[in-house]
Amino acid sequence: MIYEKIKLNDEAYMTTYIADDPLGADRKRPVVVICPGGGYECCSPREAEPIALAFNAAGIHAVVVNYRVFAVYPASLRDLSDAVCIVRDNAEKWRIDTERVVVCGFSAGGHLAASLGVFWNSEPAVKRDDEKNKPNGMILAYPVITAGPHAHEGSIRTVSGGDSELAEKMSLEKQVTEDCPRAFIWHTFEDPAVPVENSLLMAAALREKNIETELHIFPKGPHGLSTASEFVAESEQGVIPKVQEWIKMAVDWIFAL
Image (cartoon, rainbow, N blue to C red):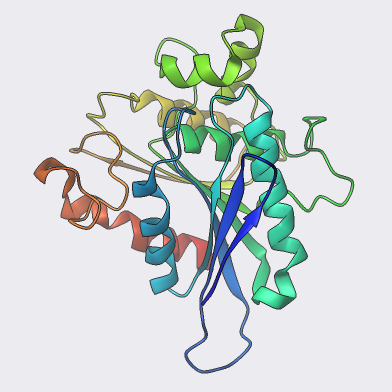
């Protein structure tokens, strides 16, 4: 494995989990660029390395982005955009399939991943002529999406700095265009922190633009499930075998891109 920490700026860094090839071949593999959650106030370790290792086990490279927190938009978005560009710049060295570069975010990290999906070619702070920051797909796990009635107010307040006009821009279901990448979205119906409507609103917006989307709503489970396994669960309520299936479904989705 190529395990390396790469500085993005004075506050942010990315960690690579580039899987070895058991056959010693130079086969190119997809890569998942992971954005942990944490309300834009921290990067949860439960949604970082455990996710990277789960994708590694399925033969997919991974990168975890510890983006800037307590930072007003577009600081964290710039961190993620830079990380995706670094991934593409190292595609040959890291044996990456450049047609399968996927961003994957959890909760507020889902908002960040979706922000790159909708703003990669329109936000001046990240727009590039070479389009190296364009994701081929996005995996959104119980994502913060809206600044409307179903908002996770803490995340939206932090990323917008309390500016009402910027908060409206952070309502990502209103920012989807035809250039947004395909999506795999999952949530639990009873999520008490980030209402399932966030995922439903995003899926509806993608459908309106005819962007292929796979959506899974699991009936049971609290917020912040990560892999929903004993390895990361904070309590018995976080161990849900049915929800654990999301990793395999996401892997199948990535290989089908």
